[in-house]
Image (cartoon, rainbow, N blue to C red; front, side, top):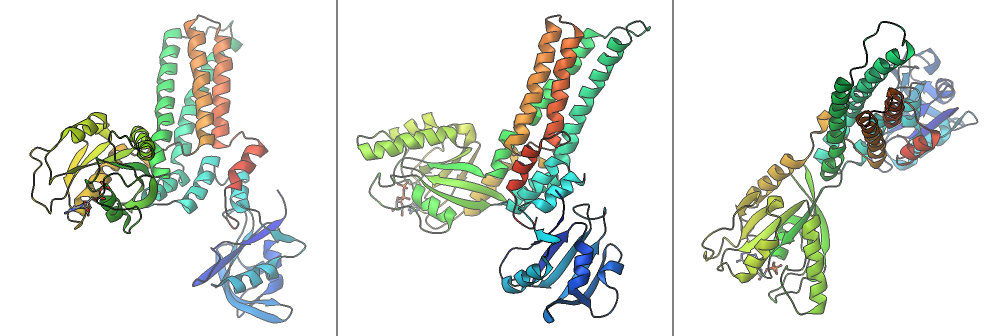
Length: 452
Ligand code: GDP
C-alpha cells in the first residue's frame, strides 16, 4: 500500500462542515500547491498538530475558505503525513475540493484505506481497527459503548494476556527441551495441566462473550406472545410508535411475522409481532402459530401478554406451559378495564402491569426491558469477541489448547504439547492481527466506508 490518498471523511450531504482528508508522503506538498494561507505559514512550513486559515485555489478560482490541519508522520491517525481540510459542509463544495486535491501523486482512497494504513503502521491492532467500523455502524448507545471499548483496546489486552500465558508455558517447555543436560528441574506435568485447564476456561469464557455480545450488536430478538385478543398488536404498536401490524377484534388475524426495531434505554429490540400462540385448525393461521412457537425458542426476550380484564383460562395455561419463563417479561395488559385476572402468573424474569391502549405504565415496561438487557449483555469494557473472524481465531486457539491437554493426559512427549501450544499462539496472533495474511486484512477493511 503506497502513494498518497484522499477522501471526504464526513458523510455526504449538507452539514455545517465537511472534512477532506489526505494521507501519504505527498500530502503536505500537495496541500502547498492548492492552499493559499490568508496569513501565516504554508503547509510545508507548518508543524504537526497546527492549523492555518486560508482558501483552496483551483485554476485561479477560489473554491472555499477552509481550515487546514497538518499532522506529521508518525503522529497522525494513519502514521503518515496527513492533511485535513475543513470546509463548509455541502456535497458540491467538498467534492470540488477533493477533486482539486487529486493529481498524479494523490489518488482517491479505497473504503477503509486510512484505517488500514493505521493498522499496517502499527497504530491500531486489528481488533481495534474492526471496532472503528463498529463505532461508525453502531445502532444504539450500548452498541456504541461496546465498540468504543474495543477501540480502546479492551479485547486486544485480554487476548494478549492469554497469549502471554501461552508463551510462558512454551518457554518453560523450551528451556527443558533445549537444555536436557543442564540441571533444570523437570517440567511439572501436574502444574502444566492446571495452567492449561485455567487457560482453556478463560478462552471459553471469552468465546461466550460472542453470543452474549450479539444482543449488543444486533439488538435483542424480541417476541410478543399471548393468546388472541390480549392486546399483542396494540402493545407492538405502542412500542413501535406507529400502526404497523393489523389490530382487530376478530381472533387470529395477525398472521404474519412483522418485524420492527425500536430503541429502549440504549438497547435495540428487534420486535416480531407474531400470530397468537394457540391451537388452531385454520391452515394459514397454523403456519403463523408454528412460526411463533419456533420464534419463542429463538427469542432473546419474550413479552408474554395476559389480559387482566378476563379470568385466566385453559388457553393462557397452555401458553404458560410453553413459555421460556426465565427469558420472559410477563405483561399484564388492560389495566384500564375492571380486573378479572385474580392471580398473576409466576416464575418470570419480571412482571409489569400496563394498558397498551392508553399507554399507561409503558415506562415501567421500558425499565423492565432495560434491566433484563443489562443482566444479560456482556460488559464490553472487559473485552469481548466482536465478530466471526475473531471468534473463529479464538475457537482455533481453544481447540489447539484442548489438543495440548489431550496430549498431556495421554502421556505423550512434551514435544506434542509444544506443537499444539504453538498453533494456539499463532491463532491468537492472527486474531489481533500481529500475524495475518493480506487477504484477511483486505476482508476486514472492505466493510469500511470511504474516508475512514
Ligand atoms: P392481539 O390479538 O393480541 O394482537 O390483540 P389486539 O392488539 O388486536 O387487541 C384486541 C382488542 O383489545 C382490540 O380491540 C384492542 O383495542 C383491545 N385492547 C388492547 N389493549 C388494550 C388495553 O390495554 N385496554 C383496553 N381497554 N383494550 C385493549
